[in-house]
Length: 331
Ligand code: NAD
Image (tube, rainbow, N blue to C red):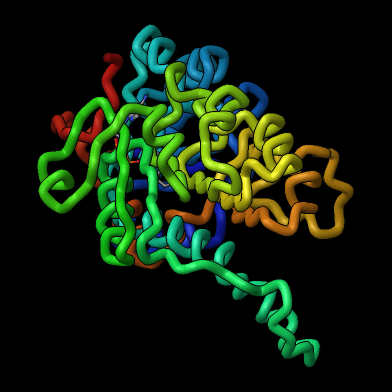
């Protein structure tokens, strides 16, 4: 199997080289992302391996098919960036890594919460400058607070268990209720109940036409004054301009995001010497109560190992014609 790997970062190459020791799968690494402009780089390959910000729309998939590509191997769980109808139309199979270390992302959500709350990032900088004052560093205890979780799949469940361990009360919303979580003390409520009753809201549902902009003006209005909002799922769940207005009014008291609607042109790039043309993210960065990380929830040793092993297995199973449950099929 010959696979063109797009959006390659040094750690992707390091992990693929570590686990593809026998070199059975021939990997060619490209650091550019896959889209309609770069699709011809995949010419002559059996498959492409892509990540969250590669754009697999109808034009790109048609181009892939024209270049002889039969496989899209996602090295991530979400597949909102793949036009599944187009993949079916052009006979290109799509595989993903559905479950890799959900704790990796759940723990990152906790890191965002604790950093925003206890302001350790600010304390770190202060102390380095010889400023030992505590003024403006006051936090609050998580114990006894109500956390609302939208989407209680693998990551949402791991996050619920962590927050139960912190002594929080958990409200959850999902079309499928987990009996296990209910037994552990999670209360399923409707969306409005979750919006109105939560001190902290964390998003763990996928980005779909239904969940796009689930955090928008009309829903923000239902939330508690000063709510903490955490998004480690997909940027499109939050209507960013509405969140900015809610930050300005104080409705959102804290915003922690690992994903951003327009992240494609920013995340995973070192733009430290560039003029960033995105005024929206610059406005977000300017708020003292906003914490942004660049889609790094998955970025642990354990998760990278699982992602790499599953991706290699998906590619080899596809090559051998072996069915496995990681194929993404049009619903
Ligand atoms: P999952 O499929 O196990 O769980 C998703 C849950 O969301 C399911 O229980 C589903 O029923 C629920 N859901 C679907 N539509 C909903 C809706 N309209 N309202 C409420 N709930 C809804 O997925 P997961 O592995 O837990 O991953 C969740 C999301 O996390 C992924 O879709 C992906 O976008 C994101 N993610 C982010 C990172 C990162 O690095 N930040 C890494 C992996 C995944």
